[in-house]
Amino acid sequence: MDRDRTFTDRIADQITRRFGSTVFFIFNLLFFTIWIAWNNAWIPGAAVFDPYPFGMLTMVVSLEAIFLSIFVLISQNRAAKVADLREELDLQLNIQSEEEITKVLVLVDEIHDHLGLSPEDDEDLARMKQKTDLVALEKLISKEMDDAE
Image (cartoon, rainbow, N blue to C red; front, side):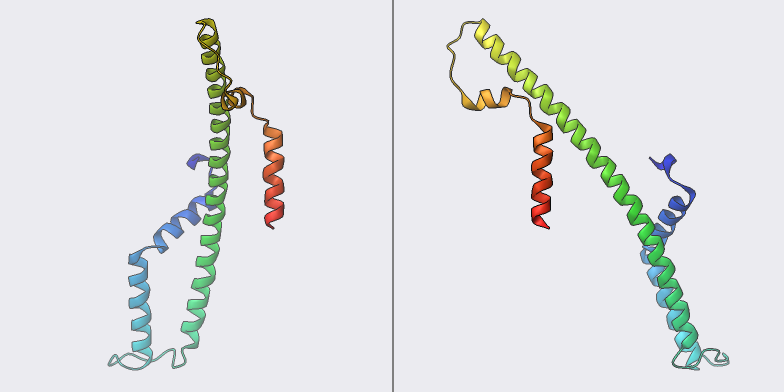
């Protein structure tokens, strides 16, 4: 799936990965501490360029927040698409497994009959041997989702 990602997806994921780290947190902490110390004249010989209430710092922080939010949203959208694909794959595998298990149950029941073993009226077995009505199941799930809203 990585090869299917667009250039912007790869950039957004990389930025999210790098900026969502302890190193980035420490960098921000140091950067803002130095900025505030510098502009409060706590560093001897440093010329104040953004006096209190730090208008330029506010703008820098706001821009950083805007861009980081955009990159996080892009990455989350990508992650949601991947999760949807995995869910679909999981559903298809579950459907295939259910069909295979049903077939095995039918074969075991036929072997049971062929060997002349005493038949038992097992309602659960009879129900499990029936194919699952996927359309009805989908309608039921859709109805439950609509009712939940």
